[in-house]
Length: 225
Image (tube, rainbow, N blue to C red; front, side, top):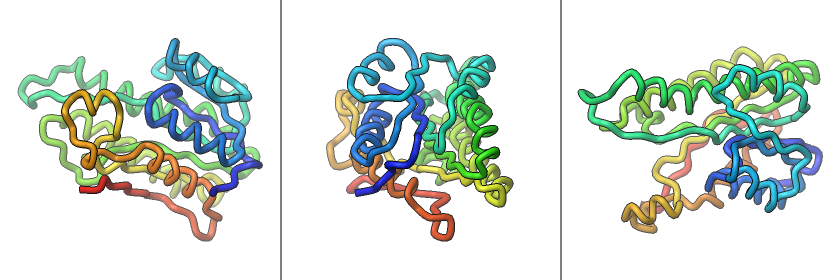
């Protein structure tokens, strides 16, 4: 099992299916957890997991940056985001703004919040969750989602190349398929075509414990089929 006993990890999207699995893995590994999310989902996560800080904030709001800067963390694991599908000819500017707001803007504000302290201590890791569509650079009927998740990947990998000499690394997690959640089960997806969220969480913990000379920058996790 990964040992993160000396780490403080900020986890966004707290209360979501993937974030819940990651929080459990972080707790099992001994990490200190800062939960960031919204409303009832965040409250349920805070009841379930001991956290050093619980921050209820809208990460699409630029004001969130200053709030996050009050907390010193070693690692950011950004799971906040959203998914949508639409036919290309029916996509609207509102759809575009919604996808880039939920997936890219939230990441940008979270990074701006944690980066000053990471640079000051010359150590840090920023992990973002992208998507299989972004890894393949193709997402039929989900072009805007794919584009926004591709931006997530490009942003984190660019940060890695820019900041690794200053002690801050980046890592992109690509779930190469849908995650096993009640919503996806209800949608009729078969069990073996879905990715186990606890397996994804273990992959996150693995990446978080890599030394600088054996770090992971991109991690693709696949379902059984």
